[in-house]
Every structure is written in structure tokens, then in C-alpha cells.
Length: 235
Image 1 (cartoon, rainbow, N blue to C red):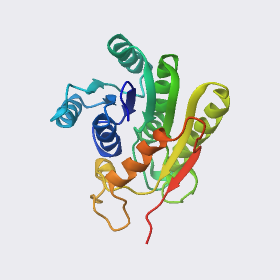
Image 2: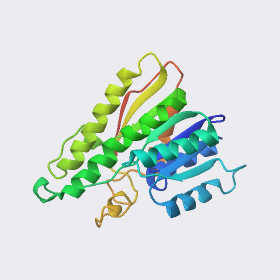
Image 3: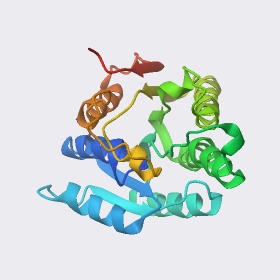
């Protein structure tokens, strides 16, 4: 299913990124997990490689907000894997509350991680991709504004704009650019932002279910693309 492919996943040490990596590696694909925390990355890769034939899941500590860090990671991937088939930009952080209360550092970190980080990694990976996919995990916040998280919404609208423009930029090449817009997912995403909102809330989708839909986008016939996919909890 994914044999002879290499996929880069940012935000790959946990949550949706890790769940997607599990599906791809189980299908025989090589996966590079990128995230900031080396300890989490090493643990995730070891867990995903357990019971597999060979170490299909590799990792590299990477701060997507730093162009220098991204360039170093891409150089490592190029040296060890050569080419890349797919890129899933999944790294992201949450910020809610009024605009007046947001600190300059919070605003910068949100925009740098959610938008600029995806641009950095795409810029680095593009020369290694001849045919494949670039999937940007945006959020329903990239299509539905909310007054409770204006800065986060702005970052996601920015990522949506980058995704749609990149698709036009790469028209005629054999690279499908997809915008993936899920609602709330049962992960540590909100806990990592300091909120008392653990996984398992009734409005959250199961992470493995969302990962299945995400990964299946890369299994469509070569002449078919889903450019924009919104995912919501049903029922």
C-alpha cells in the first residue's frame, strides 16, 4: 500500500501525526516524524517500530518555526532517504481567549508554528518530491471563524490561503496539494495548551478514525484529488 514511499509528518510525536504514521508504516511506508521534543519522538518511533520488519519509522528533532532547524532536518532526510513522496504538515498549537489578552509571544508562536512552520517545511521538502502529496492539516477554524480564538483562527486562515495558493503554484506537476479541515480530535492538543480539556470529550472525534481518513487521501487514483476536506463529528 505504501511500499517504496517516504512520508514526512510534522507534529509526529503524538496525536494525529503519530496515528497517521502508524497507518502508513503498517502499510509498508517509511515515515519521518518531526517535532521539537526528542524524548517524545524517540518513544513514538520505538513504539511504532515494535513488531515491524525493520525500522520504518525514523525521527528528527525539528523546530518548524526555525528555518535553520528545518533545513538541518531536511538535509538529514535527504542523506538517509533520498527522495520524499508525501508531506503531512500536522504541527500546530492552540490559543484561545481575547485578542486584548494575548501576549506578543503567544501571537508570534501561534502564527509561526501554524503557518510559517508549514511554509518552512514545504519549502525544504519540495525539491525532494517528484510525485506525491502535500497535505496541510488546517482545522475547521480555517473555514469557520470564532470570536473565542481570533488569533488561532487567523493562523488557520493563513494556512488555508497558503494551501490553496500552493496548489495553483504546483499545477502541472505531479504533486497533489490537499487541505484537511478536521474538527476537535480526541488528543492531548488542548491539554498541551494548558487547558483542562482532556481527550474523550463527547464532541471529539476518535484520533484513529481521523487518521484513517487523512491517510486514505493518499490512496486515491492518480487522476483524482480531494482538494478540500472538512471533517466533523456526526450525531
